Image (tube, rainbow, N blue to C red; front, side):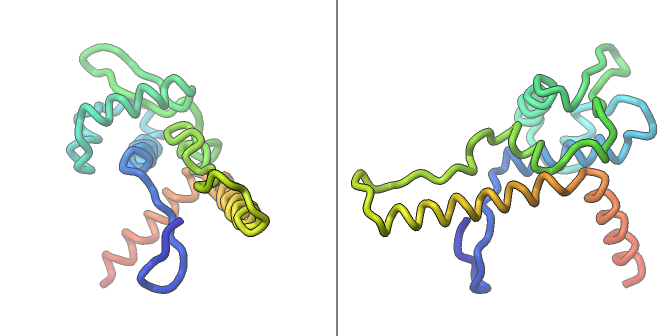
Length: 152
């Protein structure tokens, strides 16, 4: 979490995490087609470096979120329904324990300990919220934004 220009706290999301979430959302948007999506198509559509996306999709495949189909018409598909995959799940797979807060000081004091406990409590609540948001929820929100943009 970092201070924002607007006075609150903001989450620090790595490029890798953002790309993984975008890739999952792209695959989810085509879930009903039951056809694989090529890495090249995802990379071009969203401006994600191809080599980086390959690594991310392999990581998501290893975790069982996506499946790969070989061959000329191959690519990647979601292994589960978008309603059964959470944003928190994707983020945890890609970033692992990046959300943990560690004490910077070598000497633990009561003041530093209470800060550490507070930050960890905030991260726990944040993680809980992210696990409540399904990929299907995000897709639904994106459709609402597309419609709103159309009417402007």
